Length: 486
Image 1: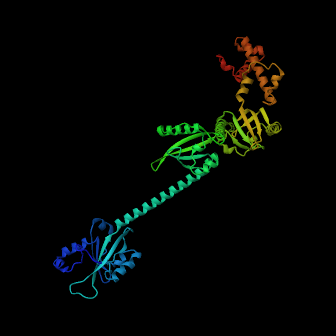
Image 2 (image 1 turned 90 degrees about the horizontal axis):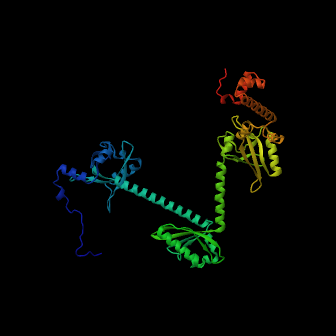
Image 3 (image 1 turned 135 degrees about the vertical axis):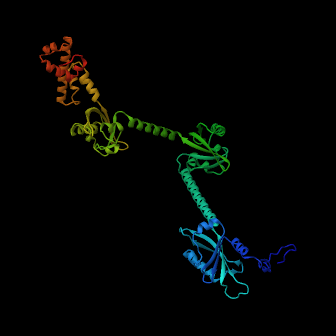
């Protein structure tokens, strides 16, 4: 190959001695030190006789003085064959120039120092044969290693981001393809359909699967105008209200909602179509959810059991009546553990439910985990679909019974009124309550007739004063007067 007339040919020094022959020792040392980051003078046995470092960072990293030690003992086990090869090759000169070998030195703190070495034999003037010494020039590879490490980390980060994007795209595709509602993506305008999911193809029929299909082929003219107006409002204000559209095939009415997004500096619109039946189902689902929230927060206890009376679910009011900390304590337990004075009450309740399907105002008692009792009134219903179960509404009647039996100052006017207490209270309680009521009314009447003269009232009732005072304390009448009892 011929060279041009103006080409420059770079040749090695033809007579380097004429430039370096007269250097003093200090200049020669400076020249050698400047040639590399680390310079080692190694004898024919591979022992380091002298060394020079350039840079404070290396002096702080080495920490050990390698003078007098075999060079191979200052490196890691993996690098020792490389040191032996450098010494054996007497410099490693090849046709391409000096050969550099990467080795790792072991430091005193256990870390490694990466250096790249090239060995040059040192001959005295007139010396022939194997040189007695060689100079090992080392370059600090830590900056390159740090760059390589950053490159590896950057590649790993890019790889993770790539797979994350692939996973996101896969999830998007899966969601888009399996969505039950028809979804269409437009690019810029209603005439450019970017993508439509299978539900949209099912909605608009075989026409939607043809090449060049647009929404104008499946929606009537008023619907297309409403769609254009909605997209215009969405483009200008960033929001739009749903609109009603109608198909041309079967005149089915749909509710259309739209949202916008940008990708690769392009404007896209996502259209979602909802059938009237789906809208009704969504409304029913929301109503049921509200009903469940109301039942959970209701002041009356609500319980759902299986046909044997084992609790499936209970609200907070039932847990409060039963003195329970959580619903898990009640689940799978029989309801009669907390309900009924005896096991007979719950068996009678279940029998009526199975026979009639519902029970109203069944009076019984609720027992708590820690011994509390409450008079309650139960209404229940048996449900057969979709899964057979029993529902109970339990109302605390303790306050109402107290007001009706103790606060009412009139005696029952008929036997039917007295029999209303049957089922609510045991017979002995009914007799005791009736007796106490009559006693209280007689004492209050005597005090009223005597102008709150207790001595006269006791004489009128045929009681001693001490017995009268005991009954006044019992019925709470003593606190309503200002007279002291001695």
